[in-house]
Image (cartoon, rainbow, N blue to C red; front, side, top):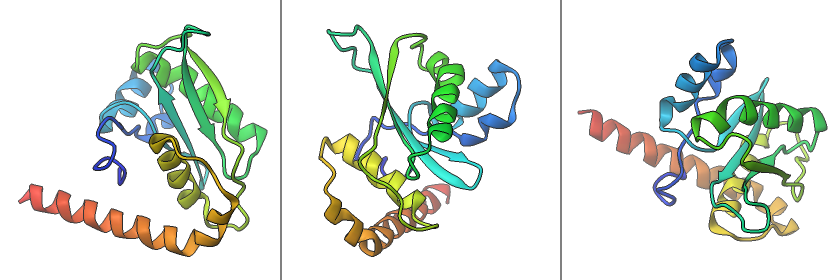
Length: 161
C-alpha cells in the first residue's frame, strides 16, 4: 500500500483470500483492497507479484511478474497457482497471462523478504533495473519503507477523522 501514492494505478490484493475454499469468496476477499497487484504471504515469508495488463503483440497476453526473495520453485508454484485460480478471474484475464520469474535478487538473511518484495515491485513499476549494489542499501531501504508506511498511516488517520 505504501507505493500507492507514487503509482496510482497499483491496486492491492488482500492475501487472506488463501483462507477460503470457494472461488467466489476468494475473489471477493482478494479484491477487498481494490483489485490488482502486489503483496502476498507464503507462511511467514513475503513474496510479490505484479500483473501488467498490457497485452503484448507477440504473445497476445499480459505478464505476471513473480518474485520470491528465496528463489524457491515451490514458492513460485504457489504464486502462480494463486494468481491463476483467483486473480486472473478478478482481473478478467483468464488464460491471458504469461508468468515470468524475477530472479535478480536473492535474500541473504532471515528477515529482509518484505523489504526485497517491495523493492522489486518498485523496480518493476518504475521500469528500473536491478543492481547488486542494492544489497548494501538494505538498511536504507528498511528506513525508507518505514517512513512511507508511517506517512501512509498518518494520511489514513487524517482521513478517518
